[in-house]
Amino acid sequence: MPRRQRARSSSGGGPQGLPGISTTGRRAGTFCVLLIVALAVQATRVQVFQKNALDHNPANQRLTIQRYDQPRGNILVAGEPITGSTPTGGRFDYERTYTDGRRYAAVTGYSSQTYGNTQLEGVYDDLLSGTDSRLASWALWDAVARRQNPGGDVHTTIDRAAQQAALQGLGTQQGAVVALEPATGRILALASTPSYDPGSFAGSGAADRQAWDRLQADTNQPMLNRALRQIYPPGSSFKVVTAAAALANGVVEDIDAPTGAPSPYVLPGTTTELVNDTTACDRPNLSLDTAMVLSCNSVLGYLGVQVGLERMVSMAESFGFDDASLDIPVRAARSNFDRAMDPAQLALSSIGQYDTAATPLVMAMVAAGVADGGRVMYPQLVDKLTKADGSTVQVMRPALYREAMDSSVAGRVQQLMTDVVDNGTGRSARIPGATVGGKTGTAQHGVGNSGTPFAWFISWAKPSGSSEVPPVAVAVVVADSDATDVTGGRLAAPIAKAVMQAVLTGR
Image 1 (cartoon, rainbow, N blue to C red):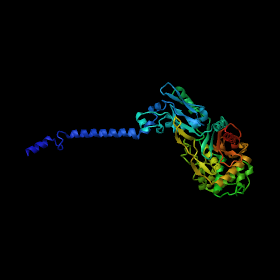
Image 2 (tube, rainbow, N blue to C red; image 1 turned 180 degrees about the horizontal axis):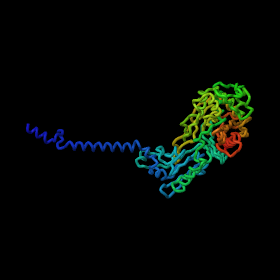
Image 3 (tube, one colour; image 1 turned 45 degrees about the vertical axis):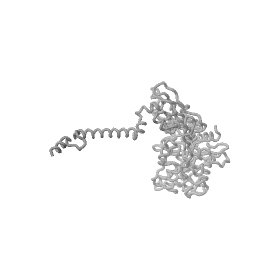
Image 4 (cartoon, one colour; image 1 turned 180 degrees about the vertical axis):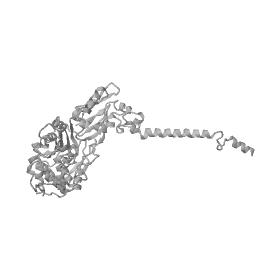
């Protein structure tokens, strides 16, 4: 018994086999272990789970320095670079440069050592800067060795002649042009005016900051991409969507037959007449073809109500309206066609007014969908991505967006658009030796419609006698002009004509 008592006493009350460890010691040891575990968890959280967020934090200068410690890959048009890099001799080894930056700013966006990256420069920053894992021959070894690969290149779909025609046509006016290849969705022109030189603030010096401040203070908003990021009421150019909905849903079958539209047309549930811009429209029972040629609000407003809200929404969405994730791969603003309206509001929306608003991109998709027999293709600004040595990283394939209507309906809408150009408000878009279809639009806006109207024209063209899908479809909006006669036919149609001619002739 005395020996057992001494054994228990020598153990200090601890477990057998661990003589001499006090309760305080065990607690300290446990605390140290917990600290080590906490540190390991924190290190894992920071280095693994927060890696991307920290890598792309604007306060993290390490990646910015790395991004500009070698020449940046290029953005190309027709195989020729429209960007470059130049040595700086400063903290950042290289600075981004732009060839004719104003012409292509709506395409490239900017890459600035101070203000970051946007549009193609932003979407493909990893590829252009050489950090994209797809550029590595041995990705794991490159990651361990922290080896940076030469920047890759982005090959765009832009047609030089079409882009030049778009910029020249817009001139000093506020506006935008989008030209598409209907069969593939390839973007042939993407222009926004006024434009800016992304090279003016590509660096990190005082001159770059001053250039940026001037652009930010400019009330004309030259850095706003009006082709992709601005929505406008489309006015009568939206009547193409309404005509397609009326034909696709059997509300109209023969474009030359009377529609039953009354004159005057009183908005449902109101005492307000839907007025027309020309007295030639103030006749009852006009045909759809006549209504399109003359751009009659009363007839198309009436037909939109006959089609009904649900089917009008469906047709609009088939062309890209209400899509908040339309990427080309740059994200476009959401074009709007309300999903909840009373009949009077639906009538106004069916002629491109009320809350209806669209980007030039989506209105180009409307024209292209009609031109391609009702098939609306995803618009795409990039053909392929390559490594610095020219080997392929990724090829972009054409993809169907929606089947808006069948080919028989599309054929009748094509005829309506052709008649608008041959005999109606779109005469100034005629091209010798070509078949051209189009629709004008003059959209009122502002308090009491006091703002300068937006002038629209959407169209497509192909060589006369061709049975192929037209090679080009265009949307033009002139958002602010000094002209006294602001109409789609006068201001926007000639610009569309020049762009279409550039594609048809290749110059």
